[in-house]
Amino acid sequence: MGRVGLGVAAACAAATCAIAAVLVARRASARARWRRAVALLREFGEGCATPPARLRQVVDAMVVEMHAGLASDGGSKLKMLLTFVDALPTGNEEGIYYAIDLGGTNFRALRVEVGAGSVVTSRKVELPIPEEFTKGTIEELFSFVALALKDFVEREDGKDEQKALGFTFSFPVRQTSVSSGSLIRWTKGFSIENAVGKDVAQCLNEALAGSGLNVRVTALVNDTVGTLALGHYHDEDTVAAVIIGAGTNACYIERTDAIIKCQGLLTNSGGMVVNMEWGNFWSSHLPRTPYDISLDDETQNRNDQGFEKMISGIYLGEIARLVLHRMALESDVFGDAADNLSIPFTLSTPLLAAIREDDSPDLSEVRKILQEHLKIPDTRLKTRRLVVKVCDIVTRRAARLAAAGIVGILKKLGRDGSGVASSGRMRGQPRRTVVAIEGGLYQGYPVFREYLDEALVEIMGEEVARTVALRVTEDGSGVGAALLAAVHSSNRQQGSI
Ligand code: ADP
Ligand code: MG
Image 1 (cartoon, rainbow, N blue to C red):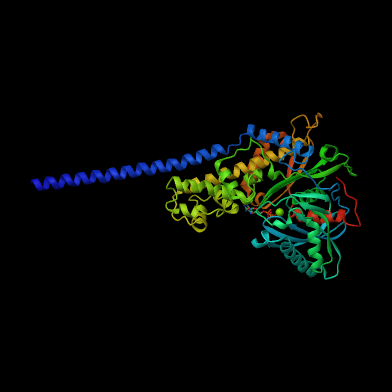
Image 2 (image 1 turned 90 degrees about the vertical axis):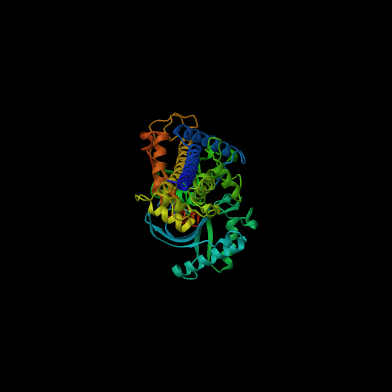
């Protein structure tokens, strides 16, 4: 080989080395970026950890806050609102009643016929609430509601029928009676300014009268109370109700003498349903991550509804999106798609659920969702596995915290098997307890339900958990409100608690 040949060979060798070095460096940096994504996942998982000991701390904090909220107004972030519902339907109700269910994603109007101890028929119409009505004026929202109800009533029963209406309005309301109460503040993305402080039942009655409809509100309740009413109608061991849908909340039957902030409160039954507004529960034991803080910053009700923001349907997809966005920025697992992940609320909770529940070997459903909804093409299988893991962590924490909340109520009632009721009374064998439950997230997402059940067993032990039944009440928030309208209408029918 001549000199020239040697030179060329040397140059080729040098170039090959350089290319190899570049490839090695690239691979090393790709590995480092992948490791960064995995590290972010690990950190997120650790931040969301809910071992049983921590859940028990949340249970105890819930009980403490329940006591504080019952002791004085403003005593706790848990409002523990009086509902004036001291009688629940018993099965003796008869007649035709209407209900409106307003308070989240959809608006529902229901017609319920009851008699002979059962709900004879129940029909409904369901419409999404147009976004503009959640931010306009209360008159606009309620005339939309009144017109939709009018349409429905006239189709079902004709024009002149006078009917009692149960109004399920699922926002915090300071009740002044079972059929009146003023809005304390909006939650779940609603922000109609001229409504706070107004009597929402009166506003709706005005809209109903304005539309020429012969229907008046006889029970103003919240979705938890409607759910409890239907649950109790079917099963007298039902003592509490929980909603896990767009938002989350719970109510339960409390002894009136335990409602210290309302001394002298007398009811025929000696009890009253208390609307906890548990979405606003807060405790330092809750596992809060930087992503929860970012989510809170994005919302209109910053620093409020902390429990809800870790549990409910409006928020879970968004928490996962925030984690994926950070991964996209700090690693290359999503290629150039970081921008597509930067748009708030593009990953809905039903999509998060579909990702978590994809059991195909190549996670084809996950690939499809990433492509179609987040505009992330061409993901590797290991990246899709990472995405599933993120959705799993978000789901598991939410379900387990909801379980801790439920056990908090059971503990307050002395039904969690921990030995001593919060009143100090010793307990015997745990009684059978039913918790009515409703909401699109709980009903539509089996993995969520599995995680919740698992946590109930971990917190209370298998034996006690066996005495607690979570019972889904289909359309309970609406049908239950119609039953309460029956109990509280002018031909008042005897209820019990
Ligand atoms: P609301 O009565 O407040 O309108 P729903 O109880 O109907 O709410 O629940 C709707 C919410 O439930 C949606 O906002 C969505 O986040 C969640 N959801 C509905 N279906 C599913 C599903 N299949 N998987 C997970 N979440 C779901
Ligand atoms: Mg609802």
